[in-house]
Image (cartoon, rainbow, N blue to C red):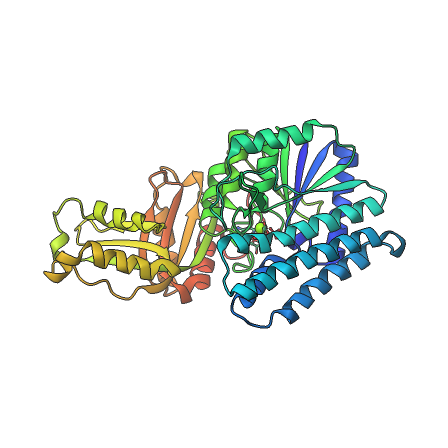
Length: 468
Ligand code: ADP
Ligand code: ASP
Ligand code: MG
């Protein structure tokens, strides 16, 4: 069994969807049983979020709704011959009516709960899976849309729900144990609570759905079909000389993804890693290219660094003051206060002088972090032992990732020289104890320049292919 997942980038237009369908047909014919997972059409989840937002703010959401409706109806018309269109058209229209009712409800109460937001965003995958299944069927290749909500069980943390794996695996296995004559086209991204409320697995979550399905069914491989030739040495949209990596370990992929490489959603690696199932990243537009294999095998790399990644929208907060020196428990109090407010800390550094603790949080959590500090350290701030935290700057984190960095001196030096040579100022650095990752914080405005400079320093300025 193989799981093939097609992302929104592979389903952006009817032509791309046809290319995906051709890959599915070939895979089933040549390589045995498969199951397919799909995302919403490209951009549709964003559109649904915009619609929900507009409805809850009393804005006129009809133009945006009409666009979404038109896009799906056009896809149906382009992908199915006129004589086979009508059942799908009815189904799509009914579903869009359901969405319209939900949005109307949101506009009436002028409020959008996380639960309703998930119910709205779920329409993207419910529509795309139905359209792809009908297209394959009408092409003589019977396929069935599988709504994964009754099978993938989560808690009620709407927006990024936690999967309850035992129940989920049992339900997925039971579904696939009953003989299905037709190919299953499963909705990615969406799930449900025990009470049947729709949840979503976080943005980019269809990759995770594919991995859950792969682990439940003990698949031989999970294929993530997207719009690039694999996991690249850096985001090709930011670094034109980035090149595809033939292979990387689950840990490397997890680090790259965690620090911003959008090509794969970080939680995807967990189920696959536990079940030791390789994940292959492939390009829908160039299926002949081998792609990248993520597995527990460590490929010999020509470079000590496997890849670079960056993420913007970070605020770097500094806690400093003469009163911190030699006082035990400051860090514990700080991070305790942040944890109580559910703030996730992305990176931490502490100078050996103990005078400053620097930490990075998502920009939208910066205000809450400042409040947490003000509350926790109110007595020390009043006595002037700890400074009132300054307004944090907008920053980006650049991370160099690679198993080959372990016990290899000079990596940090190369990183800093590269930036120094290009006049990019490094605000803070941190190295994970695993030595798998060195991260540097730079001003948001310097993100792309710093990334390109570091890429050139590690891999050479005009690298097109890996040197090994
Ligand atoms: P999909 O819709 O198929 O899920 P995504 O847009 O989520 O696709 O992910 C693919 C995109 O990830 C690429 O187009 C690329 O711009 C971006 N990306 C970021 N970092 C990397 C990287 N290291 N390697 C490959 N792609 C990357
Ligand atoms: N459609 C969802 C999103 O845009 C899930 C995914 O693309 O994987 O986040
Ligand atoms: Mg994606």
